[in-house]
Length: 58
Image (tube, rainbow, N blue to C red; front, side, top):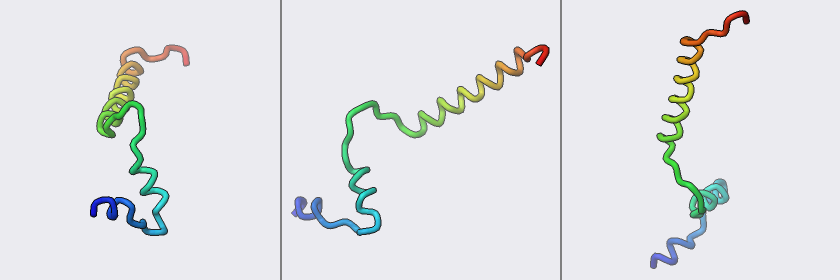
């Protein structure tokens, strides 16, 4: 019964997207929270560097 559910037809409007996201891919898996955290940290570090070491003569 589970094989019938797995091969069930998908809605026509989003069938390609659902199939794409169901596929398991190789590679590094990173949670979205980690990506947002690292991005926020890089932005904060960049702003702190600009505040601590202002560009003189620009």
